Length: 261
Image 1 (cartoon, rainbow, N blue to C red):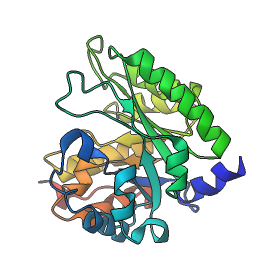
Image 2: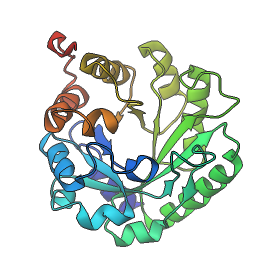
Image 3: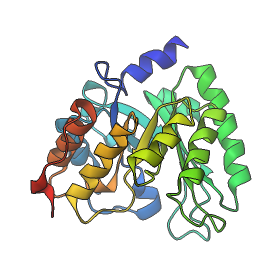
Image 4: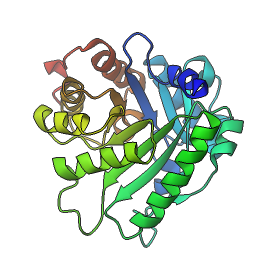
């Protein structure tokens, strides 16, 4: 397991054990939206702000620039769907773990939506990818969300806890999931799984203070970091918001009232 250990050191801060991941895998699902049309510039800005790693698809790795490796860990996302698909919640595999390793990845991420019609296929793919990651010594980040017609509330502690536990049961090293809205309820999520939990950012927020407060509360509840995309790469000051999030995650700095807007 030494390979996983070494690679995880490039994703998690060695002093704090925490991580700030900025996913930018949205080009397949949404197209060249604001913030990721010029991917290299945005990657350089999140590196300047102190992020730990980014998540991108395999095809963009050659265009990511020198911040990868020098300042940022690389996590290659290997599942996808488009927003115009008949079932956007059904994520199919679009790359192999071996191909990501050949690109220099420090980790792999896979997306699994618990509760959607194609849950069985995604869970099966998850298990097979996990096995291969273990053989390669490659860390696996699982993006697990409660989504589908049987999910009444995707932020309810029971279904979020189920997602976090499923990720561990199938062999992920880190799970990304929804924040449940309070410190007390998210403590239940963290306690229910043995692997590190990082929170998603969700849809773009209107208030920066709300974003920072959510991250602060998640860290107080025991989260080991964040994996936030649109609220970072679509911000008017990408380096600045990354820096403020990093201060919360790595230093425990509470959000300031001046960000109420």
